[in-house]
Length: 216
Image 1 (spheres, one colour):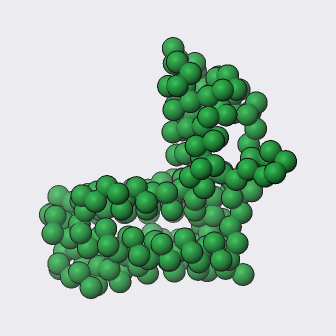
Image 2: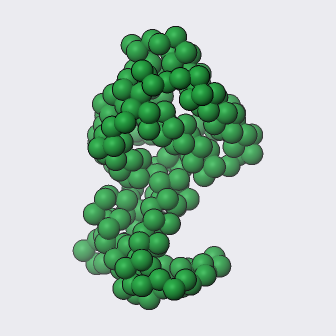
């Protein structure tokens, strides 16, 4: 992969740049489960020294986005059935709550925005673009949840998304999608109708049904 251009970063801002870029890549499923990373490889890709690369890795390990073995091997997580179930349960708790809090502020402009994003989800499905699909799917949910005005709950939710990123890439391959998620339409319909129970159910089903298919 071509090295990213070096800026006039200090060590601190360089590590933040590397951290944010790697975090986004992991969340969007650009890296598969169990994919190894090295400080040398990260330093070369981002044109930074070992110190900012090491600090970015440290933060991502702390967030559960990467694992660090006793031998020092850094890799994306390979989730057990129990871990998938735990993270699916967290999504089932957090995301319906965010959607419910967003409902009173779900004006027509937001609904139009969600319909536009869902159209782009369809385009990613048509292109068989797994990373693009995951990115647009998360944008659909984040756009709705931002209206909840609950930053602490949203931050917890994004940490769950981060830990699930590589697994979501594997899930996309297993689902073999030919159309956008059916429950996105139900989410939009519930928002239009002001139907909180229907919205909670649609969000809960959308965020957990696929994940639980991954369990062996």
